[in-house]
Image 1 (cartoon, helix red, strand yellow):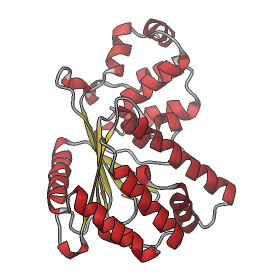
Image 2 (cartoon, helix red, strand yellow; image 1 turned 90 degrees about the horizontal axis):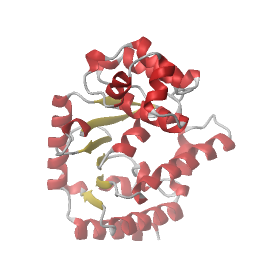
Image 3 (tube, helix red, strand yellow; image 1 turned 90 degrees about the vertical axis):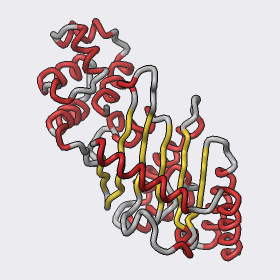
Image 4 (tube, helix red, strand yellow; image 1 turned 45 degrees about the vertical axis):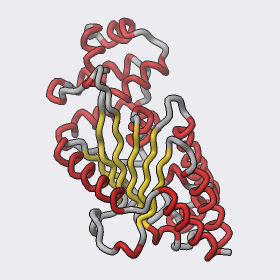
Length: 279
């Protein structure tokens, strides 16, 4: 799916019709169409993907990233590397295509719901060797990514947040108070469900696992246009899983988490109580 999304983005940017791309790449229009609607991994070829990318005037980095995706396609994952061009960034690409996003956040506020000051404090703590200008650029990129929440049709975001996240002081009391206010406000949106998993629950379905994101799109009219992928956040990189069995396991895990978490009203009460501790 990521390969198809990347090709769509390149063709759109180039302004060329599929027939023009096919002619420049030396392949049939049917081949370009098949790559754009790709579902069968076994039918993709490196020379073809390279030719189509070059016909779209892709940069060398964009072309090589697509080639690497085809080379590694059978592994079912893609490492989120800073060298990957933005147009092919996996998480942004998947979010742009997804109809819903389910998040288990057990350590930090999810990126889509972070305030600028909270995001800045995080980057200052984790990117200690970077200069302030580079950090500011990364914060800007994170805030820009949040525009997905205002698109039409809207992305449905459902977050289960460990209560301990509310009590981990990132950036100081003022930053945390502002961040929790933002969470409460965002939870009022009809396209955002935000639940808090109380610390008193103890052991839960996610066990000792970390932050994960489940991105999906269900299209009954065109099943081939459906999508389901799991993103696991690791240190400085991400792991992507799209094998049906893996996705099913995480769907069940998230169902148990949201069934165990507090409901919307109780969750807002828990957030308000945590905020009062900072003031």
